[in-house]
Image 1 (cartoon, rainbow, N blue to C red):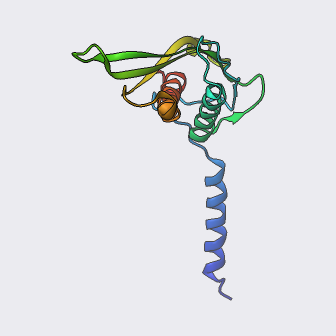
Image 2: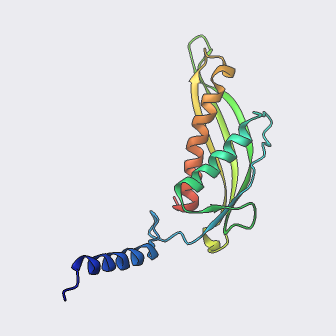
Image 3: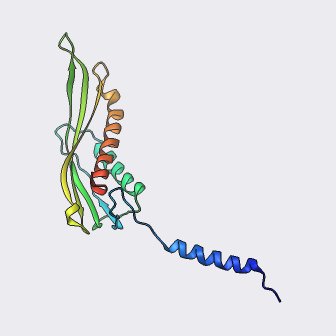
Length: 170
């Protein structure tokens, strides 16, 4: 009596798939694997002299979304293997391009955030650093009308810079 080959093939494929699922590959752009499993990202309070009432919440949420969305890290409320904390320390506008009539053609919104990163698994990768982002806008525009878009653009860039510095050592 001949055994059906399809049963053997199914058993071998099942065995292969189960073994494949148990394998994992750690990778990073620096060549060193990201071995941490958890991250804590504290709320970043606004300690700047000029306050944007939604900046703290928007920045904190964008930072959490980036780290959770781009890695396999699990966000935990406290005692993560990786920890991010800090504060918004500066939020201001300045005139950039002065025209012949001594009026600004461009203004710049700048945001500075102090970030403390702690890697409990490898203390050498921990740091504390100020990150500054800015975006220019036409001085003829009403700041209140463009502020939301400016802030979103700046936050997006700063979050990427913080992510790169913390996990990719850039």
